[in-house]
Length: 344
Ligand code: SF4
Image 1 (cartoon, rainbow, N blue to C red):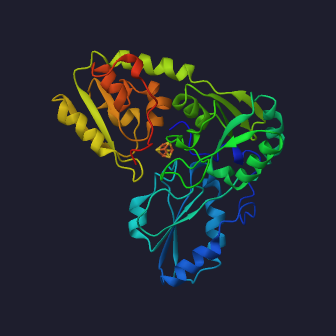
Image 2 (cartoon, rainbow, N blue to C red):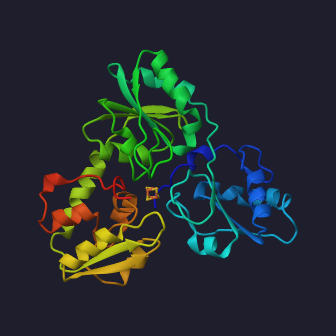
Image 3 (tube, rainbow, N blue to C red):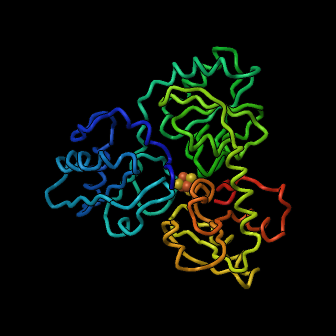
C-alpha cells in the first residue's frame, strides 16, 4: 500500500537514537503485568511500518521487565493498520501486543497500545481558521492525534464555530476518528469538514467519500493548510472502469487479513458470474496477480489498495461497485468511494 494509518510523517525528525526511546509511553508495565498474569513464555510485538525503527529498543526495554525465561518475538510482516494483525504470530504467542493503532479487531487477547503524536496542532489550527467558511464545521482526525481532539474542538468553539463531531461506527474507537477506509465520523450536519493530521492519505479518501462537502486539511506535520480534492482519483477510477469493460474473465480477491474480510461480497459476485473466480490473498500486489492471467480483478479487501495502488497493476483492479458499473449492472454516475462503513 502507498501509505498506512499514520506515523510516517510524525517520525521524520526523531533521528536514529532509538534504544530506550522515551518519546512515547509504550505501556510496557501493562505488557509485563499481562505476561505475569498469564505466566507467559512468549510475547509478540507488532509495529506499523513507520514505527518499526523503534522495535529493537522497545524489545530491549521490555526484556528488562520480564523473567529470563520469556522469549520476545517481533513481527516482521508488513503492517498498515489495526486491520492487519499478524494472526500466525498471534496464535503462537502467549501475549500479543499491537503498537500504534487503536483497537479494531475483537478476538484473541490482543493488547493495543495506541501511541499518540506529540506534534503541536495549535499553530496549524490558528492558520486553518482563516480558510474556513461560515460558522459551522465538522471536525475529524486520525487515532494518532486523538489525545488533542478535545483541545481542537474547544479551540474552534472559542473562535465562534459550531463544531460537529460524531463517532462513525464500530470499526472506529473514537469520536471524530477516521480511517483510510472509513469516514463515517464525517457524516455531520455541516457543509465543510476540517481534517487535522499529517499526509494526504486520509484527506484524499475523505474528499472521495464526501464529494458534496468542502474538505480543508490542516496538516501540523508538514505545516500546511489546503483544500482536499478528489478530482484526480475520480478520473483514475473512471479510466479503470472503462479499461475493464471488455474483460471476459475476472479474479475476485477475498482478502485474508483479519480486519479486511468481506468474503460475502466476493462470493456474491462469483455466484453471479460463471467467468469469475474467488482468489484468496494476504498481500495484494501486481506480482501476486500476474501469473493468473485473468482479464481484470475485483478487490474486496482494503479499498485503498484499489484506489491508491490500482494504477500499478497490469490489469484493471476495481472495487465491488466499480465491477457492477463495468459489467453494466449500475450506471456510470453511480460511482462511489468504497469503504468499510456499514459492512464491518
Ligand atoms: S483496510 Fe482500512 S484500516 Fe486497514 S489499511 Fe486499509 S484503509 Fe487502513
